[in-house]
Length: 236
Length: 236
DNA sequence: ACCTGAACACCGTTCAAGT
DNA sequence: ACCTGAACACCGTTCAAGT
Image (tube, rainbow over all chains, first blue to last red):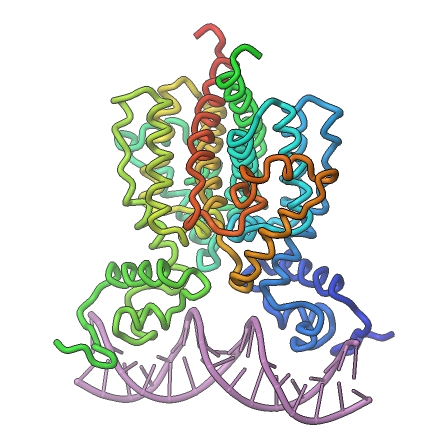
């Protein structure tokens, strides 16, 4: 099988389309993610894709499910619930950093696939075993899952396409010229803050991961949840 | 001035374009947000917009800045830092719920406008006054801002366009038929969990806000951050 | 200085036609 | 059953031409 202009691959299924789609998304990002690009990646024609998958939105959902299915979380029974939550969060962040452009989808559209269902069940089990019940169980789930998913999406935010490299330099320079009287906290901690803090970054988390902050966030979320537990059942 | 097919409004500036753009985004969502729709909203032609603003991406950034500028946060000195963080988070959530479709943008693209700069400075000041310093100050900032911004974006996730009402019913029904042996936590808490927990929702946060969970998230984040502070400087 | 009209190079999706 | 080719109704953006 030689590689022609269009090597006209045949005999592929929906899974192959999803794989090709993920490759395209990884390479060119969401704004470059077109059905035509996916078809090219697969060596076929745009219209052919519609035989195998529903459409663009369908493909994006399938990509999310596939990325989540890469997670390998430990058994719920083998460890303390706080450690399990940490492991789960680290795994989630790991698979999303492997496909940074998926971050924007997860925090934008409801995630509903089979993988998400199993994951939800496990998180609920762990929180239940920790002592959360009923309405508070549901809330605790939304606290930890929303924090982890949302935080990683924010970390993985990327520079808008219309802002070029030159803008980056100007922005970094403008931070150095900020008046100290008006911005004492920024100017007083410029090295710790310039390009490293969420409102003052000029590169996304795929290039510049926020490792320190994530570890501190883990402690915050898990420690904070443990506090909630004490609050409701103080005698336990 | 009668309203014709195109009432050819003239003498408007960039701010008017941003306002029209926000109206369009609120009405039809990000996927319906087209330059042509903005032009229609304004009673002018697509090409005219480019005289006033840079383009689509530019408009979206301007909308984010405008929404953030609706926040009114209390003075940093008037209250305890934990209360200030709570007030800030509530304000952020309030303005984003007023423009739910903006949530997807904020967690997708770096936010860099003037309003974000001022907000960042204030958050840093508050955390500094609480006792965070240097690298830990930057990390704490990223913990709270990333959690708040990310969580609200996840809350405001919406149903993908290709999933209709009928899908909603089927999904809710499928949850009720889940095998109890395989999904004990979900089936055992079905009422608390069906449609109310992040992986099991079929409506976005604009329609079904997660109020309970947000209040618990506030306690978790702020309480967790206070723990971080004790950990580093136990004698304070 | 600002607006109009037309065009360019794309999109997602559909559908008749092929094999 | 699966693939191809062409078309439709859109996009964002540019640019010459108007006023």
